[in-house]
Length: 395
Ligand SMILES: Cc1cc2nc3c(=O)[nH]c(=O)nc-3n(C[C@H](O)[C@H](O)[C@H](O)COP(=O)(O)OP(=O)(O)OC[C@H]3O[C@@H](n4cnc5c(N)ncnc54)[C@H](O)[C@@H]3O)c2cc1C
Image 1: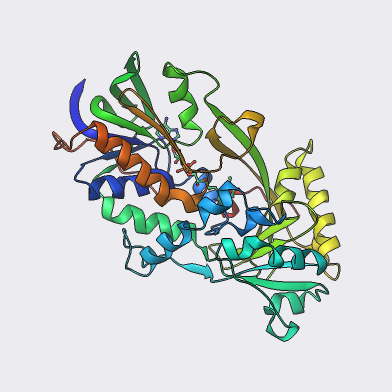
Image 2: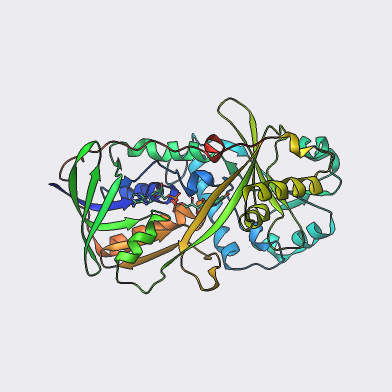
């Protein structure tokens, strides 16, 4: 087996792996990224693309840890998207500069009067009906609408912008086998149908593999379980032309639905539905029940529309995280170090820069940069597809 050396091997090419690659390079490392399938193909391209500033987690009027930690993150993205940040993300497409919160009125008052809005720098302004986005008027919405200054991005354009400067350092590794001695990863064997097996001997391995971190965690001497999955069944509607971005607020810490608007490759508009619709739909026993439930929810929010006229689909996806007691969402991006190996989870797309900072801290404390012995004879991975491009649509 041909052998190669490198300073850092990053396993997993979602948002976390790509952002970490840039941060490590900025600190003199020559990292290589190994991706099993496609870049972003799991959680990252399933995300709704919201650069959360924390307000979503303060809807019940309380400002908890995650809300506070999130408030610094959007600015790092926006600086990068303005060409002034740590990475050049000036080609990232903005789908919406604002999100909207809509409700029957009383609840939104509670949110915006909360200390939360000020602590999170979240400007949440009530809108006169004349200033509502056209979608709410066209849908004949009767409640209150507020604007929240949170950007929604086209995630694939971010993946493209992050991947382009890393050309030559991103590799497809269909079958990655980790050789370990105690808590040390001694080598990564890479097998594939189109190349001879190779052995990579990194000084340090960073796992940003999402659900793939589970397997790595079981190979290391760690208290188990070290990881958790929290399932979602996102729902999709093909055809609604109203552009909507935001949360329908109810008396629950979670939005009744979070809607983002996207476009199929042929130009057809798509609504991508998360929030409590996705949390509750995955507890239903069949996709048909989830479809019924979704149509029922939408009819309760926007009764004027015949929702059954739109093709609909379900998209099941797990959130992959470090283990938490009671399976709550972790309140921050997490890096744990074990020998020469790091396990890393951003928890949110918007936390990718914060995670990268922590990865660099851990790596620079323990390892020195090393030149790569030779380019790896492996193909480059493609960027993945969106759920609406892969979904199984039902009429
Ligand atoms: C439905 C949904 C909506 C979301 N919406 C938002 C949002 O609006 N805003 C926000 O901030 N966050 C959002 N999130 C959270 C966000 O998507 C995730 O926190 C983030 O994308 C995780 O990125 P990642 O790089 O860690 O994982 P992933 O994107 O899952 O990437 C892991 C990569 O590792 C690869 N891999 C796995 N195993 C191996 C292996 N053995 N070898 C090599 N490669 C491997 C996978 O193929 C994959 O490409 C959402 C999440 C979900 C599920």
